[in-house]
Length: 440
Image 1 (cartoon, rainbow, N blue to C red):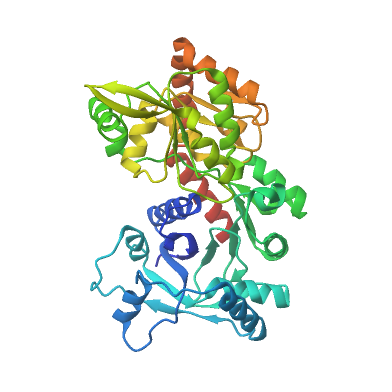
Image 2 (cartoon, helix red, strand yellow):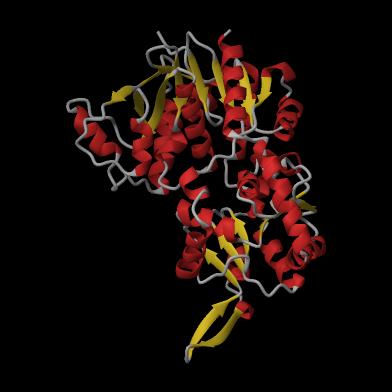
């Protein structure tokens, strides 16, 4: 009989994709390839319906989510603090009846053998940690392994419990995130003390975890991540990519620079725009990614009227923006953007891994990225590395990418070699080795 891995799937239920959601999907796929039975536990914003299984499915996917005002949320948190869960958090399996036509994110949940759900699961776990200083117990049929895909104070008795800590950004760059820093600190310290094993995604993050959490290095494994894009998109003929660029974005192949990522402080977007302007490039800068948080300065840069010009096309005056922001780009179109770019610019201040760098390399696109955090080990010698705090250095690198075709050709070749080191096959081997080690 195959062994069961229970995954924590908080990020799989979010409407907007996240890097952690991608991580969780890849882990699940590998576990199933390795012959494991994959189950998932999620939290819900309303109680699970116990009388009608199909109604639980409907309520879970209801577009009208339970809304909480800040005041009501504060009251709920206070009540949660008064009502501890010393005997554990009870979960209920969600039955996929087939009644609901699932959106893409729900299809992810339906791929698991069993979906366990609990009302207000993560809030209850956090409040339990705050009051008792330890993880809350999940009352589920005991799996062979519990793997939380991000730091969360939950545990399952009777099996090894492992936790992925992608990075310590809330502690290293507290000014760049909106996390509750005290809660995050207490959570990762608790996991460092009590977890059977900690998983992370780069050697830089592993060193941070060992140093700042005081954990034995034998209890922390770096598995890296994999660069994996749908073959149907990576193998599309280039003339179809060029059609996408022209019809959707009004761009030409090799005629623009691209940044991929959320608009948030650690992505360094305002500095990137300053450096791009200073480079003197006449190729537009395209920013592809949703709004994260603390983005006012970045948006002000993006919307600066200096980047607007006017052109006459077929007798019609058209507005042209030198810096353009696309808040939402479907994956198929994003792959086209990355394949057609003159270069991908990713001068982040801190990354646990930095997947866009490898995705660009795998697609044969030259990359400029930062010489800090995990990015140098991910990029290797296949990218232009810059100090993300030095706008002049970034501008010089952009000019080099812009004007030197030989350099771009060299980076394309090096990048594809580097990306191959992070193939799905190698990643699967590392994850299989991890699970084998933990399960004994």
